[in-house]
Amino acid sequence: MQALVEKITQCNTLKDLEAVRIEIFGKKGVLAQEFAKMKSVPNEEKKAFAQELNRQKSQLTSLFDEKLEVLSKEAKEQTMREEAVDVTLYSPLKVSGALHPVNETMNRMIDYFVSMNFTIEDGPFIEDDFHNFEALNLPVYHPARDMQDTFFLNDGHLLRTHTSPVQIRTMLSQKPPIRMIAPGSVFRRDFDLTHTPMFHQIEGLVVEEGDGVSFSHLKFILEDFLRTMFGDVAVRFRPSFFPFTEPSTEVDISCIFCEGTGCRVCSHTGWLEILGAGMVDSNVFKAVGYENVSGYAFGLGIERIAMLLHQIPDLRSMFEGDLRLLEQFR
Ligand SMILES: [Zn+2]
Image 1 (cartoon, protein in one colour):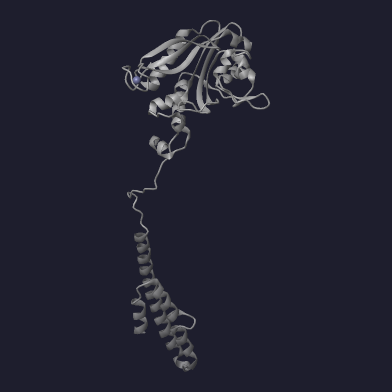
Image 2 (tube, protein in one colour):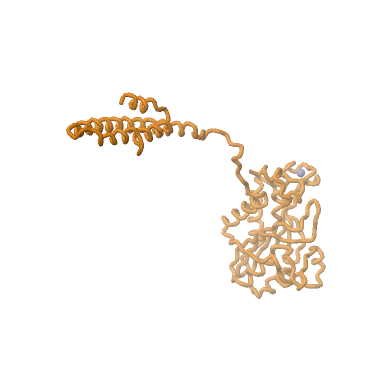
């Protein structure tokens, strides 16, 4: 008996204890063998023999249970110690993504115009001649069509060269008042330091019945927008020409790198060209069947703004997917 008690108390692991369990309590264990001896015990001693054996059995059982509990607890604590996670430990694998500078810049622009109550309109990349050129006062023979090198598809369709066709689609499907922007991809056959075959524009259009929309409204919204994007800059309006607006203007801001004193980025002029705008040409309204309305439109390249804001010198690097560039925008 004392030897069995020692066997249990000397166990240090659950594995050892399991071996002891089989040895003592198993089918062919010590206790089973003792109970088997009952057969050869004289009848008058059987009761006392059985009582003594059961007493020993219950003593061993409670000792065993006690030991099992202690060892289980120890094993659990050891596992907890070994598998503990140090949540303060720096992990080099913990990387977070970031928006592409073009998307990030586009989102900032959209946020501004949505805050000024503009709606966001969308249109197809594959356009027809009417929506991309003709309705925008660019008839077939118009020399301004040469300004845009277009990707034509075999069936006479084309990849839109600007976001302006969305203006036409919106005016054809809605009645004034219209107050919309159209951000999105556009396509031209160009590839050099400042041109890529695909780039992004954001177009704006405001139309109201009567002559309520004036150039001063356009001037206010563009100045406010440019100062939201670039901070406290000077804004300059230069007369220009676009087929779909009359009068037309190109808008510059004072150079954000040299503050107007002249540097390489601004070609030593002190100004940066930012966007084109104007009052919607009456021929455009005619093409969509609008009468007695007034409105303004503007459009700008999103990459150009992103390049200025992040001082990226080569437009093509925006689309190479080079992680060394993109990781800087995290
Ligand atoms: Zn400059």
